Length: 423
Length: 151
Image (cartoon, rainbow over all chains, first blue to last red):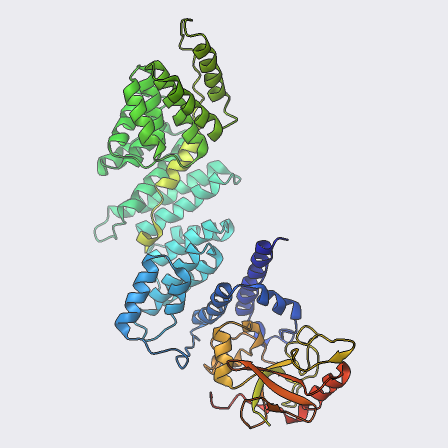
């Protein structure tokens, strides 16, 4: 193993050791005594930052059983305002180890449940969702019935791919008459998210997702019910519509988007989602949705790409170039950027732009997605045509089919509510 | 004789350390003092000890030992938060004098090497097995240090 691999393995082993020791209270076990020099040697492999993090975790885990201890003797006293400032700064700069350290300092001015929530957030950001779950569950224990903590725990279970537990909790929340709409929305999303992993009984999972989201929507109409943040409601509507589409209930899916767009007319992601749904059934309506989404600065690349292709077919090459520029700012995958560069090259060609600029765009497209045959075909054709400038040019370009499932997946990710907002 | 502390496994029912060549017994690991030609040499390492409970905690704060090497009891008393070691581990004390370069026994010398930390080394070149036996011979002089003040 390389040195980083050795450190990662040692860290992982110690993390699991600490979690297991706490969970099983191994300090009291007859065979729980440590006489394991190999394990200790593993400790010595860790850089100081990770050793601090693990010691801190071990200390913080005692808060789960209300046995947290502080030792102030070795720290310089710190005034409350300075502690608050340093915590704020570390939190905003996403310096999670520093946040975790400062949370152990006194004077403590944050409520215990919130301390646990912040610890969960820190561990979530550090990529340890199983650890984050423990602190979100503890926050729930300290503030029973507080939906945001339960939601964050669900998100941790999803991120950790612990689907059995996630689905068990989602079912439990759907049976609980006190569950808030937000909690039901995110519970419904558990079924959808699991179905996206290729889990069995996709139809059943989609149906269950729709049912649980509907439970939340039904509750919304009652006076006095907690109103969820817009982002959670938008995500719920997308979840519901995606699942209805999967179940072949096209009209209901469309109605779901219609209702959502009526409520959130300025939401480009809902417009994009409806545009994708209408692609096969109502091309004109679909393009209208993409056009509106672009005007509203949609975050995903798809409305820009879909609309650019439409404009290309209508010979509006300047518009294509502008849409490609905007789309490239949003293309997170190389393959999507390649499609944009391909389209840019074609538009430049049709505008009789310089061969150098066209070739550069093609080369970029090919380098970003070397295995896209349509892009290769277009590039090859350009090379032939540019070598014989007197030959008539036909529009024999190929546009590769867009990955509709990928479009949906990216769009789904783009509407997921921020974890900070969830709490 | 200098005062020093070390966490070691307790030999029930006595409050005395178990003997052995591991990190948590009364003895020395070869990695802490590598033998040369079958001998133990001064100035090349030895059995680790610390100056006081606060010193132990400060080493913990620098995370030089794992949380499993300290009995969980010391977490409960607030002395070392985060400790999750077996309850069969115990914090032992030896001696009463200053924590400085000085004789522990005729064959052993305390050699501080940094804040709060020292090694118990052979006083002179000796057969490695004799060095280990010299450490074992201190066993009856180790007593519980868990109720001691921090410094």
